[in-house]
Length: 112
Image (tube, rainbow, N blue to C red; front, side, top):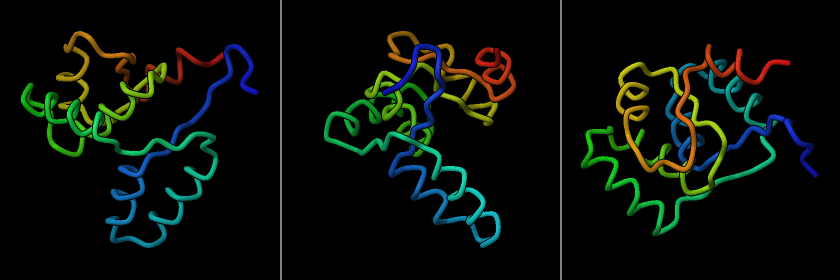
C-alpha cells in the first residue's frame, strides 16, 4: 500500500521501448536498473493512443506524446521530463491529469 506523500515511480512500455534503443549497453542497463524500482507499469491502450494523437496535433513530438498520454491517463501526480522543448509545450497545455515538471523542480518538490 502506498503511504500518503510517498513517491511511486511508474514504468511504461514507452520507456522500455526508448531504453531498448540506447546504443550504450552500460547506460541501457543502468536505466533498466533504475526502472526496476517502479511499482506501477503503464501500458498503451486505445484511449492512450487517441490522447497521444491529440497531443501530437498540439505540437508534442510522437513519442513524447505517448509518454504524456500514459501519464495523464494514469492520473500520475507528476510527469517529469528533462527535455526543455517537451517541458515548455506540455506545461502550457490545459486539461492534463498530471503536473508537468522538470527533474530539478521534481526533486525540490518531493523532498522532505
